[in-house]
Length: 368
View: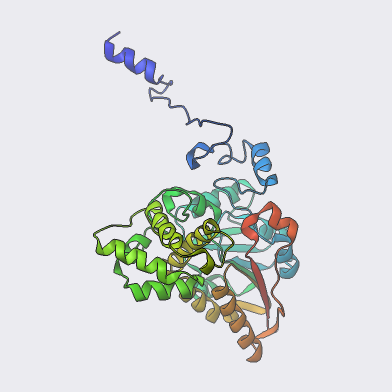
């Protein structure tokens, strides 16, 4: 055996096909820290006990999304066999699988997703659960194209739009959605189109950034954060990663005197400002409020007479738009009934799934 082959055999044994077998990454300590090390959570079919243990602790397993307010949504939608429905935001498929099951093998559920990465995984996941092409169809498109989808496949007897970011996107550092892990500052639902958050930041003036932070996330320290970012750019700095942006936000908020903070501690203020700033940029690069506006304009005509629509929102800007459109639709005779008060998840659901805490549910019923 040559010296080169000896080194190869010690480093990584070959399997029968001749390819090198590589062991999965292991982690130090009791619990995994990095996304790629959470291999048990990322394989829920094989490690169901581990996944349930993570959920029972009030955490969301890596690479998974727990559907929010599923029971309340199903109670309202009143799905019956033979109906045609639409899940406007497929995501992990948690809501879709429950709605498809309610059809009891008769009818059809269509589902939309702008994310080219996750839709492939979820389509396969739905097929594994027994929802084949006879009852379920996933379509790669943004839900701003609701009118076109309805003309081809509607009108719909029931419809759901969950406006939250999927946990799979948040947890994966390569997507750049979370300030908690290092990764490229991207934040796009569809990384194949548009510009990243890093690119968008470089085009904004200080005034534009301040306004963006206020309008998209009600950030109370918008001016201080904007000033810190603009000062960084003027000095020739770049902001290409989530960590670089988080550090600038942290520095800006820590300079604010404690007596002027809304939060009980500086660290609480830092965490909330990081979350709000990332949210504001995500809304900007994905044109989320514009997309929602277009969707709500098309919604009544996409529903069959008596059709039911439920919408989950996660921040005040979204909720205001939904409430306004539903009220206008009711006034103009487009909707027969709309929800009076916003509906929120229960305490137990929030305990098991902390990401549900900011959720608001509103619904409307199309005029017959």
